[in-house]
Amino acid sequence: MGPIRGPLATALDMLTDALALVGQHSLYCRSQRQPQYPAMDVRLVMEQIEDSKGLIIGAMELLKKV
Image (cartoon, rainbow, N blue to C red; front, side):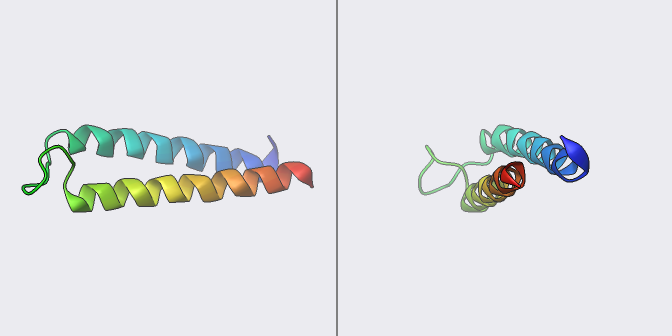
């Protein structure tokens, strides 16, 4: 992968692991108003991790073209 894309791939794997852990936590931490959904803070963390993964994937694709 190279000296730049390699660490980005590692960061992407770490974010994926974090997303899995937060997903497991969301099973127990439910919204009181809407029990079918995770609590708002858990949803926000999951959204931020997904957004971060998207940024890393975009950067890796740009580096692949260079």
